[in-house]
Image (tube, rainbow, N blue to C red; front, side):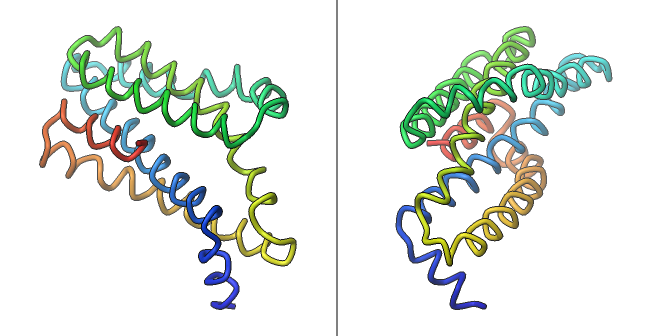
Amino acid sequence: MLSNYLSVIKNRDFRFLWLAQITSQIALNMLSFVLAIIVYQATHSNTAVSLILLSFAVPSIIFGVVAGGIVDFYDKRVVLILCNASRFIILLGFFLFSHNILLLFILTIFVSIITQFFIPAEVPSIASLVSEEELLTANSLFTISFYLSMMIGFILAGPVIKLFGDKNAYLVMSFLLF
């Protein structure tokens, strides 16, 4: 069993995709938590916090179905690179405009939209990177790391703000996407 996981992890292309999944999930989950904290600190409004969280969710409902069909027409590797590069640049925008709440909402919507194109390019790529015998193990590894990186992102949000400050937390997340 362990040898199956080691075999998959030794696959250089899969390992890069897997690490990109982990770091981007940590960054994006950290972003949602950091934004909730920062928006609340700036507005003292539960409604504003709800709206920032909806800024993540609503684009996924609107663009999620359409994005998969669009991504199927393009090289998934290129889509993954463009999505991560775009999200990296947008997170730098969070750093630059960290005190403008309206822009934070707009940037959040853009991150969410781009993520809807990243997801359908990411998961189907696994089958092209590993053998048929390794596919179950690779998918299992991806699923486990998805949930772990989600938790890690939420757990790290508070300490990252404490260590680096509100504004610089965006640079940490940008680095993870880079």
